[in-house]
Structure formats: C-alpha cells, structure tokens
Length: 215
Image 1 (cartoon, rainbow, N blue to C red):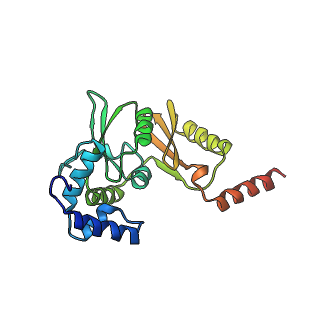
Image 2: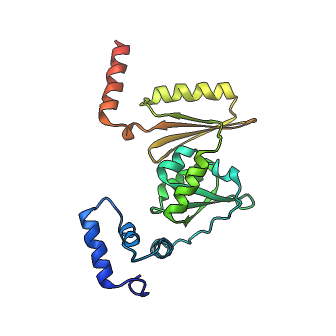
C-alpha cells in the first residue's frame, strides 16, 4: 500500500504504534479506524499478499451452497461457501482473516470436491454469517461436551442406524470432529468438540466422571 501511494510512511508508523498499544487488534483494523485506508483497499491489499482473488458476492446466491458446511464451522472458522460448480465439483470458499488450508483440505475430503479460496471483507463476512445463522437448518447436530472416542463412536453408530446411513465420512476440521452421514433422504451432520479444544478443567472432569462410572 505504501508503494502504491495509498498511505504515507508517517501514517503507517502511527498505526503500528496504535497496534503496539493494543496488540489484540490487527494492523488493518487500526488503519481503517484511523482513516488511513478503506476496507476495500485493505481487502485488495490482502488479496495480493495472500495471492488469492477478491470475491464479489452476488445479491442472489444459492442458499443451498451455505448449507454444505455446518453453521458452527462457518462461524468458528469464519469461512463462507460462495459457489459450487457441479460440473467440475469445485467449491469456492471465502475467507477474511487468512486462508486456512487445513480447513480447505478437510472440506475436500469430506465433500469429495476441489476447493478454491477467495477473499471478502470482514464486514461482508459478518453480514453473511449473520444471515445464514437465521436460516432454518435441519440435520446438523452439535455435541459441545467432551466425548472420548468410544462415546463418539457409540453416538455416531446410533445415528447412522437410525437414519439408515449408506455412507459415513469423518474428518477433523478446526476445533471439531466433523461426521457426515449420507442417507437416501438426505445428509446429516454431527460435530463433536475436539478433546484438545476443551478447557483442561472440563477434560479433567470428564476423565474423573469416567473413572467414577468404571468403578
């Protein structure tokens, strides 16, 4: 942005000083708040930095695309499925806080597709996640409590039998273990909070309870 004349060196120093005083906020947030850059300029600059295109969201988009991933993953990872091209099985996924290649790999394995990453502004991400969060979604089941592998297997097999699932896929994605059960009526999703993501005191409580039951 300096080389393109979008800001001056003194402005950058002021923003860096503000960030040092409040390191929990990103440099781009300070540049925007101080009036040194617009959100559109920052998004375009990040697109160049991360070598990915800036996506333009259409006013009318396929709502089914947003339901390809569980809402909790969209919310926690701050990602947004933008478009799915069935002919090439390519899913375009938008980010705003950095490209999570681990999440993209998990999505490819789970949905048997290719992914292409793009970038949108933080305000666009916030707006779209809020909109999707108000949509009625069926088939998503969330298990936030700590579960050991045996408990997760028991819950998963029980739901698979109840649904008459013909195929099951399991991947780790972010803080969750993502289970996808495919049945002839449709698809159901189970999300288990990964034990490593659970605060230690909750994990210790779960272990103590398991020992108590075993005794």
